[in-house]
Length: 212
Image 1 (tube, one colour):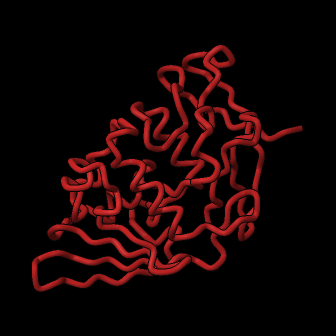
Image 2 (cartoon, rainbow, N blue to C red):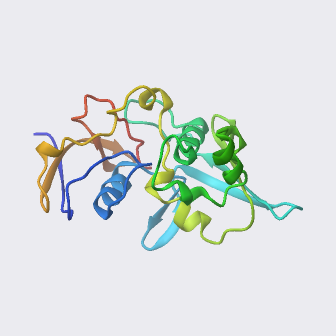
């Protein structure tokens, strides 16, 4: 039989788009489906999709984080997770056209205000140095960047080719769900001897990264 994740939430899930979640239930399920640069284990923050990172304080008081992604990080269809997936997801999150309720999560990034005001997401302080290296520049030091921003589901990577032009990539069929005890069907993945999951019943249109 197909493995099933039973999630007890306080209201029907409206979306499983990381940029658009607003409820604790959606956050909880998204945290199971997606993993960001960092993750929380046993109450401590540790590298997630990133295998390591470096921090550099710049002369103008900006701070640059360089994250190197795990070579084993891949999506459930076998494609590698790349730095571009993070760049795309973060730019999409900040873009006013997305109208994300979580856009301010990245307000500490250099160029945040300019990118939103001018509608030019290339001004945002995030770039892919290469396929496995993500460079993030903050406008000033931020004590909670690693612990709260890099672990938030809204900052998870997304595959551009699966999201663009596919408005239903993360919609939930509300008619199929019931409050308090919602039953959502998932397919199990395997990684490093542990079992992980990704959504099966959305016409295979959402693909989630394996936790490592």
